[in-house]
Length: 197
Image 1: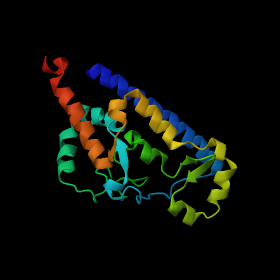
Image 2: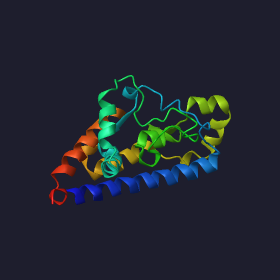
Image 3: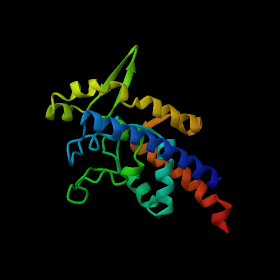
Image 4: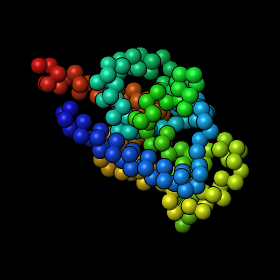
């Protein structure tokens, strides 16, 4: 069972890598970037940001492997729906580039926010962070010049979902999705015959 989950996790990470590459190309073309050190989206109430258990599978495996999973499960027991994501590092002196403690494992909503678009009927509408738009009012014009290069977040959500519809269909508030992923992996981690030997 663990081998299957490790393989599934690797496939999720490959989709993340593909999305990251597309975001990087688009960002370079349009000269779009986050405000340095900004943590506003990470500070949002966790019930306003959603992900699937499957999106957190790679992080859950990493956390059990590095023996921090139980620490995060305890944190998750002590937060409410208005709390920010438990992965937020609020202190800019510890992580000046941004707020996520596990940046390379973040789910699609966090990867794509501000750097993607949605399809509406026959058009593509960019989703650009309002703080970036305030800082650079001309950004929408630059983005529209390269609109055919912008990643569509829902395309990547669908790619992940298709890897395992049981784990990838239902969205949960971000802290709950992480908790369920940690429990899902933890249950299998400790019941694995390899671990018991």
